[in-house]
View 1 (cartoon, each protein chain N blue to C red):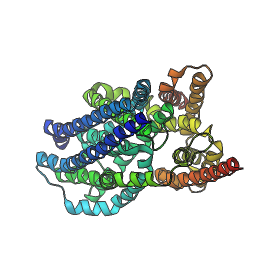
View 2: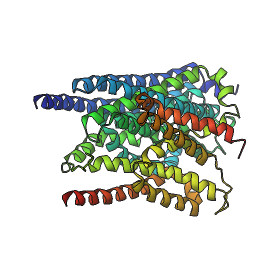
View 3: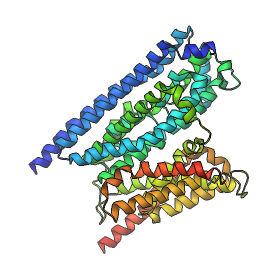
View 4: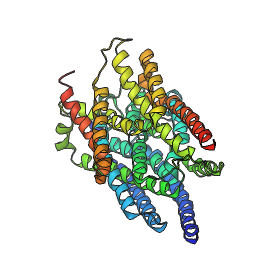
Length: 231
Length: 254
């Protein structure tokens, strides 16, 4: 009991510091990212046209702002404190950080909202971000010799299909144990894309209705299972 | 080389972008060390922590190469250092090209090409790219702590017979929704991608998804039935690799 209390205390201190470090790092990275165009502009002898930035933001930025709010609300509980600060700093959430963290959580058998999940999620996203940084740094360093290989037309289909390869593997892993939850959203979203093919270019926005439907179905079966247990 | 492109690929620009990337790498190292030490301190098994690092690293290599291709694609119009920065920090492969293209139109360019690029248009495009995607980070600064606290304060989670709370189930369900959206888009793309029910769209993404799913089934069989637990660490990366390799051969059949 005492050990449990002690562990909880250690985790609470860690969690508080994570928020502090996460906030400080996010603010610094924000300043650096917004400042970089001005710094590069100074090197080039130019400053950004703020009027065009404003107009551009109104025409395309609003959509991404809404998308960011949805991503924040959906992915923060999935990733926990440390994981979400890092994921929003390093980006590539849907195609990399979320599957990576979910996979790590599964391998470790950690439950949502537990200290173990927080630790696993943070380790997983930090490692994944570091690997991307290293691969890109190496790639940029070796850009001249690597370019002909990576851009070889024979290999192009392989690199064009990273995301289908990722979601195909994840689909098997998650659908097989949750077929009751998966079948309806998969059918619904497939039919929607078949009937309105223009939505295919907005797949990242369609995650929300598909996710809401899955959660709704999961809730139905959860309540049903609870009722059975009471009986 | 085009004059503006050589300016965008100059040493000072590399130093600015490389410095920011190095700072983010340091943040990642700090988070890894803190999480690992705390994990040990609260009694987690070091093997589990090491497996998390190994599986996450092996999983991340292939998507990172895909992202590197994005850097190469963007570097022709925005220079290598800026493309490198955008895709190492905060950016996303699908997002960058769209925003850069839209930003180019706002500064009066017909498309995102280096031949029309000026120092002012570059600085404007770069700033717009930064501003459009910073909201996730900004929301984290102000609301992450409160939002997570609020979720934890909700009534204590009731668990099912399998020991899962609805929080666990909801997270899995949300992920199933995410995967369904992508698989559905491959099915829809094949059936109606070139017109309603024409069945002439690309079958490649769907085929790759199926093959990588079958590969995952094989890895799970090895792990669960043959008790080769170490396979878990590489099952996702291995399935993806097999799926991607199959695309090279399938292109000749489709």
